[in-house]
Length: 282
Image (cartoon, rainbow, N blue to C red; front, side, top):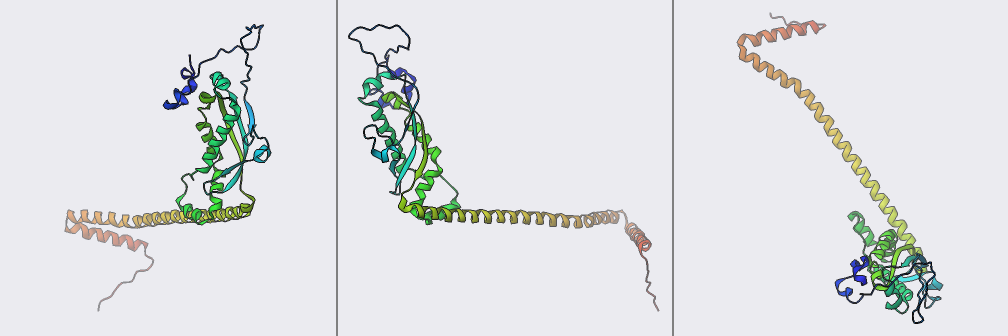
């Protein structure tokens, strides 16, 4: 049996399966007593999840600011510092790859994780956003754009790391449990400029939001005013339309019916009137 039959092999590409086909080893759980032959060798491993600073270099502990901050270059060629942790564990489905596939598996896999992270930082693209703010972002200083976008998309960076490093268990026998980037710091020489850009960008975004809200409110008010005036006009036209229909029906009934209708209407007006003026003919 090989690791290609295990579940972790599904994360390998077709051209990698032949290279990373490791045999399955026998795992003996704790307990005992156990006996071994003189030519046999025991390898004790811990498969518990472990956490390490992402800036830690096993070969050179003093690198990366004594293992406290990992340097990376953004898409706009700006150096930035990353802080966070990496959670990993030895995969019990590929112990042979961990023990015999690589001479120093932890050093190799840490370099692999860091390389994937730096590659993502260097090629990070801004997600789709509001086109109204696109021109404003382009007019801002280029030094503040990529760092701001990286800070806003820490979750996407962490998920990308987990997705890209999913095949590490089948390759090297170490599985990335989680990547937790907690901070992205700009260089000191551009930190003040970045703060000013953030302030200006937030102010412009706020003004645009207020203008859009005011315009939407005026549009709603205008629509309501049009609806009210339309209803008023319909209310004024409706009695006239009904009266015209009634007069047309009376006219069809005969010539004398319309005259009688006018006389009755005139009498009703006489009852409501307080004064009556009659024209006298001489």
